[in-house]
Length: 157
Image 1 (cartoon, rainbow, N blue to C red):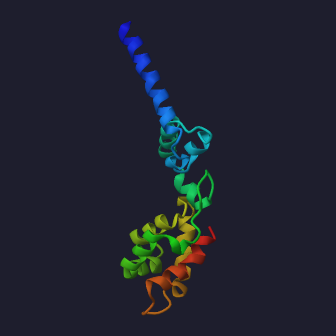
Image 2 (image 1 turned 135 degrees about the horizontal axis):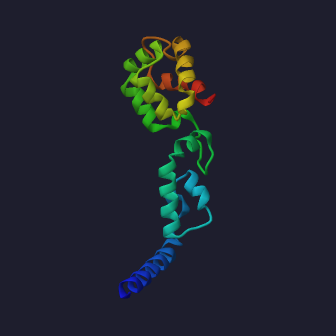
Image 3 (image 1 turned 180 degrees about the vertical axis):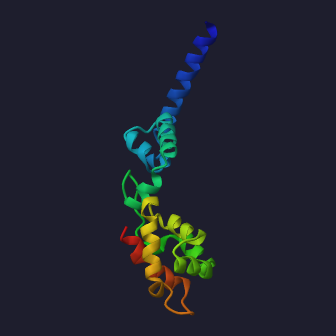
């Protein structure tokens, strides 16, 4: 019985200490997604932990980012995605080959980095394939040009 009482007291102390310390934490600690919506008005350590866990469990952050929902901010522009810029710059030839045939590992990675929802990827791949000559306009096209030429196909989603 003593162990139960001690456990309850320690747990209560930890929760109250966590709550008071966490009250000054920024809600942005939890990221965006379902958890941040459910626990939006609670700033305690425990609620933030539940918010992060819920966000991770349901994995809806990607959808939230691409759609601008679930307390997520949609990227201002496609071209501002640093990882995507680096990927395109490092993989120009392989990406061109995949876009030309409408499938492939590099094309899939592009879709992931661009935040294209999984259900829209087949359409995305088809649109890129149909517009290959508008994306890779010449043999001397730069990665910056390719990103600029890709943007209309990502932003329509």
